[in-house]
Length: 130
Image (cartoon, rainbow, N blue to C red):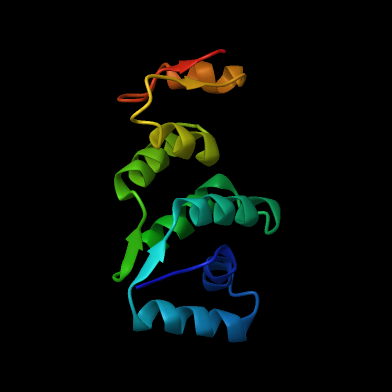
């Protein structure tokens, strides 16, 4: 199994460089890959900011990738929880940070929107202001 970088994921999803997209597809099809949470985070940001994808298209593309055979996701349970919270309106970065903080007694942030929205989430680490 090999881990993949954000640029490979973006090429695979966007296909803006046909040669690199084909190489990315061949790699993903040939062997199991490890998709790191940090790569998902960066890919989501790149798809929105650099390519203008909206929330729905971004989530659909990343979910399609995650669902492929041979794609292992780092901390799959936290990623699934983060995507569920993303569907409820949280920013994916915030959702992934919060979903990954399960061992902590609380998640401290100055972000009042996150504090407010987190109150509605099931099984979320409490979000507090410092």
